Image 1 (cartoon, rainbow, N blue to C red):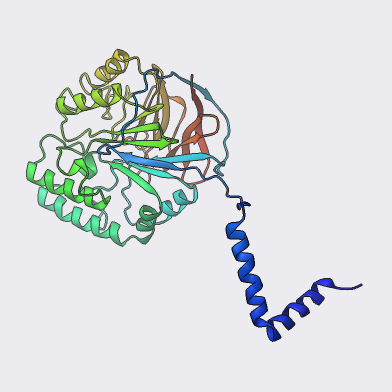
Image 2: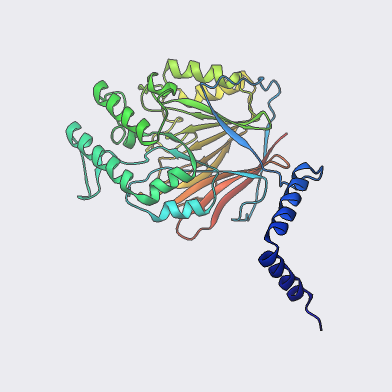
Length: 385
């Protein structure tokens, strides 16, 4: 049987050897033909989503008809990210700053965006000595060591470089355990500056000049805002009865009532809906949770998701159209306290949370992932109707 491929190869080699100029001219003419031809190569459509900061000059029309969240519990979900899906992952409570494995594991889950939800490191825990730092000077010195360790953690730095990220703080990375309004202003300012530098917050960002670290970011697809992320500061302005303070409440009201987003996500280091009297929460802190519910009710906003950390267990709960997903801890110890109300069972393993946005049919999926075995927990499919 004649091998035509070999014959063509021999002819081509002969021409290349003895008629090199002729071959070059043929290749050049073919390139010109492709360039001038009306036939265009097929390019696979690429989903483009932009993350726009609060100070962006780009404006969007207010969502004048926000829809209501309708949710369903589902038993299983796939790890492999589907096409046309934007994946948001989040977590809190990372006491083991030298841990490399978790960042490699979370990265393999392919998040398009990662959210640090507080206690991202522990200023008041000296990991080498396994003791608590108590004095201001010890906390500051330990903080400097922690920042250096994080900068030297190659896995952590690679993760930051590969995945877009947002960050808020809670008590341990703000100052120390359950401390807030009694922190010295000079120390508060220094720790804030260090926090913003660690997460490479640009100098033009409003958080460098505004008191506190609260802000919002818009996730834009096809020139429409799919999600507005409200990064709340539950430490800087906290008083005995109020977790946000007047300045931040006013900012939140102005920006959520005018929100152009299909979905609004409020992110807090402290849990929102929690009847456990031991743990800090919006529910247990004066009028904080009541004010939030009244704010959303005043503007008939039923398109709100709550994300939180802090309590060293993972859980999902729902109240008044609001789904709250609590992801904690990444590496810290597991709590045995019961936090309620709750849907399903608490996840008492190191974990992170996720939200998948299916851009083809406006489906959303959220839940928790066990960092020990990679299993899903408390998965919810929700839509806006």
